[in-house]
Image (cartoon, rainbow, N blue to C red; front, side, top):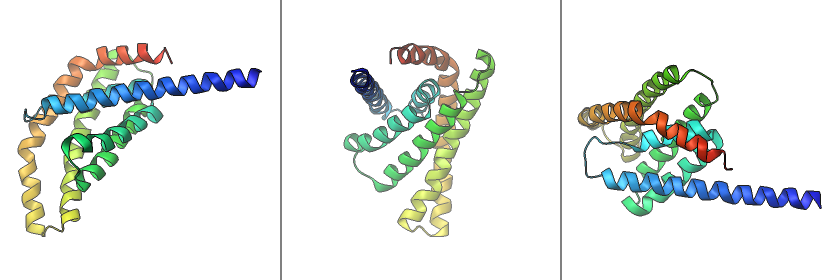
Length: 183
């Protein structure tokens, strides 16, 4: 009897976890869709950073993988984008899930998270600058042009990530930690 009760609790807990991840993924896809027409506005990183920081690596990576796969339905299937998102958002979930386990004061934590989020945003563009030319077989000259063409986009995105994370990380982290307690 005890084993059955424990198994039932695990199943309910897993269903709750799946539901929370599904709602979070829907939120990130809706956010990306809502702001896709506005150049330089990037809020998905903020959402993933605060989610993985609060819920941990495992749940962060589950959400990152689901997001990477499901967003293809909304924005169309592009193999390079799929690979880029699978690598980047899982890496982001790992880094911030790990950082979430390190206790620090709120201001130290905020500064660390903002700096890491900005660095990760730049790394996303650099990863794209390597992956896309390799995938499509660009010449060295074309790859260099692709890199330089990305600079006007990475600067406002990094600024947006820095500002939005500085302003919204602590309230989002608090909200996600409150939600986590219900699991």
